[in-house]
Length: 154
Image 1 (cartoon, rainbow, N blue to C red):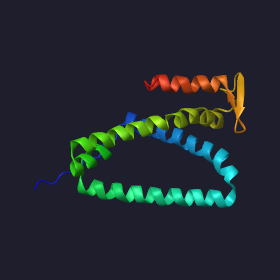
Image 2: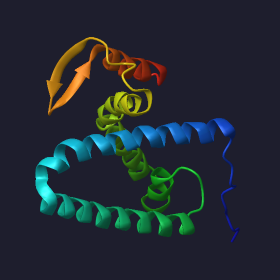
Image 3: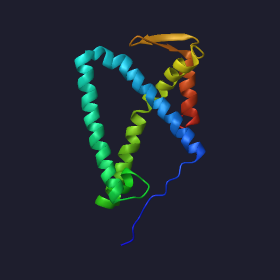
Image 4: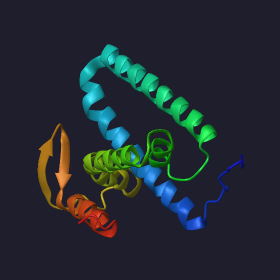
């Protein structure tokens, strides 16, 4: 049996995209902590973080085992295809795509938060409304829309 392996490669544009994506994801974490966890109180926050940590440990251990057993690019699709067949691989990929689309709003709305922290009030132009104690500005909405257009999602 032929041993398969993945080549390690991350180009400079790939590293930059990964860094920016991680920063934007960080923004959605901050929004969650500032709104929902703050309202949950200390016990609710600790419980939520503990449950989230356990779930992430289970997911990461599962992916680690699958990457060792099936070392090829493609992630969840490849793993599911190898174990259950092409039809289930397609369903896994479809559900992953729908999941990413469902959380897209969190990433798009975290970009203005990232801008607030690192660029100050640059995008705080034209206050529109307040939601959960968070003021929304026209400049930040336009920034989010521009990001979605650049990603090809609008």
